[in-house]
Length: 306
Image: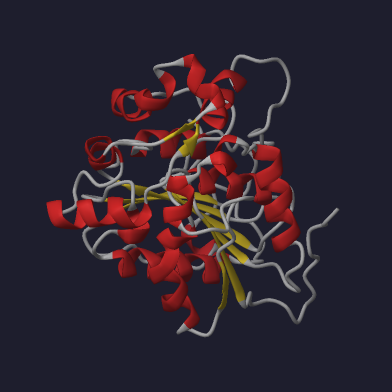
């Protein structure tokens, strides 16, 4: 059983970045970020979910690994990879990968976390209309709980690439799309009504959790800004939790034109806050290094419930 790495004084700067992909895509969705961060001198890991080690085309031809997927299996796999890194890495997750990064941080893994258009952890009940429409292909039929559910191009366009140029949206569908686990979608929905902690539970009062940044695409239909703000506001411990909104961006931020700006912002934030003492949400600006938001982008400070 892997255990979180305990940082030593000589390990103040992480040298590894772990990128965790979301649903309806594979690690291929991080292809640009991998080379971008490697060029900056980082070791970059982009683990696949169990059974997702094959190419996109193979998963579309035989989605059996998707049907068998479970959150405990994903978390055990991610913990084995992150726990084997010799110093706590920077964790970056997209969509469902954002949920898994939040769980890893809660369990003591990582030096800092950035979640991009994150799916919510257990207890975040807000469900805007755009999200209901985006997830309807899975949730419209309870039988999908035992299936791998793909998207048509039109559904992908609404859910992932609504602000992409048409040609780029279609190209992204052909390059990245795979079916998603209907079982995990249904289990995540029902977890909010089941007694006791379920698979995507985190301790929102965990004062030892590393710093966490939510990055939100302002036009995301699947996990819109209101979901990111609600998820962040659930964290009540005095740990650094921030939300930054990039206007005009869709759900598939890692592959959208201008992804470099977001990749650099995420890394800059994580580098500044990794392994540093957590700053209370009501601390004065001088108590922590400032992170300048990108020009023309909205930034919310350390988030706490009102």
